[in-house]
Image 1 (cartoon, rainbow, N blue to C red):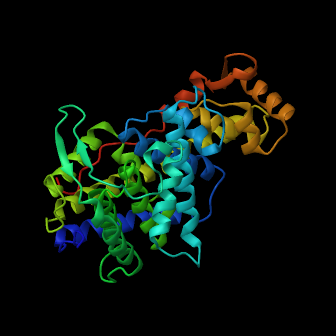
Image 2: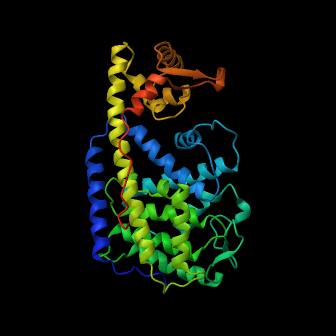
Length: 374
């Protein structure tokens, strides 16, 4: 027996409609992607990956998170946190690619494979294998046991039931609710020795992209969950629903309301970011044209405007130019007082000048959001 989808009230159904409307608006805006679409995709995926791993204590900078997405070397050393984020990127990339696969099938092996992708850097944690015994969740601050998973011998049967629920969802239940329940059930089954939270969040995204969610590449709520205040609420609501041990008869409505809140705020955040990016990009295009610079240099300026370090390797990849051309472009941006160089030789990177930062600051939108459930 798994946790069952609760009966949705008028308020939950109303919020789902609002989320769908927001995602439809975002999907319309991105129907014909502009040149800034790549930056938006990179920011969205890198923040999702960073958010999910931050929850587990694997903290990296936003620049290193962007480097993970781009397949680049990190700015900082390749510590365990980097490897955790890099492995999670591989799993999430697979999930996003699965959105359009006509031969896709849910299976126990798929779940094991995703887990192996995430945990292959920690072979001692048995990546891709069900846990062999007892497992609990401990509060890092109080050191108290806050949850005990079901007996290990129950895991294979529970996962089989779980896979069947993914393959044969109830048609009358919205995909956003299916995804939330998948997240909850994997978290509560806790089928692996480690990485269960990351798996649950990744599976939630998988359900959304496979169900044809509008603007599916931007459907993850992991950025929201990774913010410290939201992480505490995330743990609190799981504790409220879990009540200390495997109890699938418990009411999951508080969890559903939490997930709907996360989707609502994340959708508004992505829309705001999209609007800001479009405005900043258009202004930067005018500035580049005014100075007689190549149009492609906006790619470097937009990265810098949104607070990212610009390296030659990323710029030449995104602009599709040779190393010498990239170096020449970046020097011209420095000479035009649009970028500021930092570091030397191979460690050199560029950041936004005060002028570019001002353009970004002048185009920030109101960030106050009213939570749908109060």
